[in-house]
Image (tube, rainbow, N blue to C red; front, side):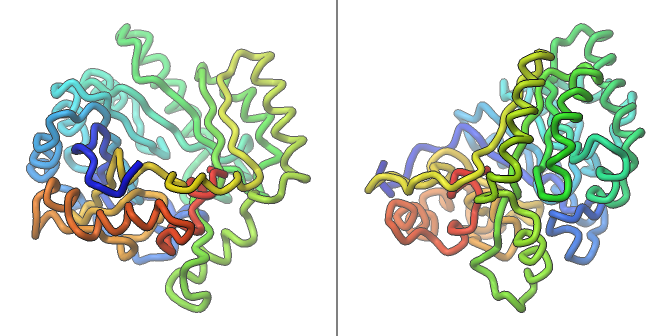
Length: 332
């Protein structure tokens, strides 16, 4: 792999809104002022212009720091991307996923949906997903499963997503059972996305940096490994497709190979129209590679900032923002 400009991406992730109705403990949204639903939403025109400018686009992810169901034009965005022949989906907290909304999204062509469920009990889940109600989310998941069956759509491909932390990891086996009970076939387990070790310990990222230091499971296999093993056993027994992350950092990449290939195959566009290499860095002021109000996406993709970012990823000294990334360290 070389730092030269690759073809325009076939995948793209778009933050359709920066607003959220929850204040989850592992999310930067909790530690920033709340954003208004209307002013923090990406316009439908900007979305169409972006995706229509990528002729080979095949996968569109409609998520960022905000809750996608708060995006004013979410259904229209799904319809537009699906009509282009793209596989489109997003991650949601599902608190706003009423049966009517589920029906509209399925009819619009939603290809996949990931629902965040970070505990198998109301007490644990609600202590993490501040503002959510466990039983409401459970009911919404069951309704979506039923809507998919009634409409005979065969989609969206539905998964539960569990962010594993010290405070909730022991509930993972029980969540495997709930996944089966709710009629969902897949459970994706991931670590926290970033350590924020590149930030000032006393700066604006201090709170989320401290949270990650307390809660992250990477390099803590002694406690989590038996839980993962039991979850894997149950998943096999119950027929749940379980994805588990590594608990220890992988060996560094070989010379000339990047620790992450995201900047060669995809990009992340915020609701403000700024372009970043990925969503994992979590923070609109970090690693900005361009602004769609100043240049087109192809110009940004082929620009100096992107070229320099890719080149650094091919060296033993990657960009500082990548060093604490769980995906770069291969523990996501």
